[in-house]
Length: 391
Ligand SMILES: [Zn+2]
Image (spheres, helix red, strand yellow):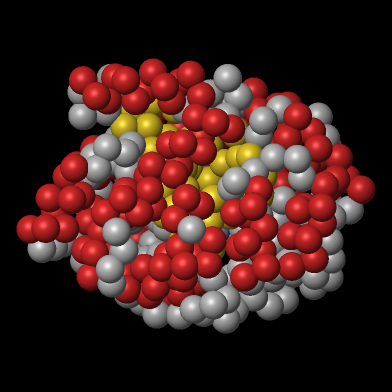
């Protein structure tokens, strides 16, 4: 009996040690494994490009998934693509932090269901609040809270922008002090509503100002470009879009099926954004926007934010993203084009956030005007946010 007790105790100790080791080691290991860059920092660019970059008043990026990894964003990390010290180093004005709440196993571009989820176990190992382990709305709220916590602990260096007056204030303060930066909350995949319309209010109250109906699988709102049905908006989807736009929340069409895009444009009364996309004109894949939809985004007064990874641009180079930028400028004009990296989106990115001057260099190289470069690098996002965020 004594021996049996001893064995049970030893097994318990071993299990505890394994779980502890997993909690300590795995989250950072997964972060490092999934969030890689093609070109390693530090980056050097021509004097002309660096001078132009240094002269930029406002640099912005419309998409990153950094909140998913429970990394300390107040620390300068030597892995992943974005954190607050690196944003300050590169004089970034605004980074959109988009929340991912569910990702199917064996994710692919063509055919995913929402039956499985790869996020649950890492979320538990990251010791997130228990309420968020199996509830997608709580999962989103926990990431909203994390960003606000960084704001609180940043000693004034980092702000979360929720209204146009927040942004106005930030811009005027940044004129006096370059060493401040800001973030903005979005969500990719409105399965984060857990099927309830009233959760739009809950997420709005937590600071979310932009949401994409779908991510990698179909949900209660409609069809993903990577789902099974490829359907348009459901009745619930229509109700959500209407409610969001009444509240001046931005609708993000990234990952939507073409039919879903058509349905959104049909009922939308406000400018539409794609937070991270490539274009069919330079890279023909199901995740990228057709000319028809690029024109519709521009006609709505929205933003086409160009992504910085191979599956969206068909090559692992800065040049491939800039080619897509040029394509959009030629098609709809420079006022609707922005950056939408997908930093830390579990994908290999061309460069980390400190590589943004390389985009200026490449745009100069292919003859994009200085005025248009400024628009793409952040002026368009600034103008768009000031005009379209709640007051
Ligand atoms: Zn995405």
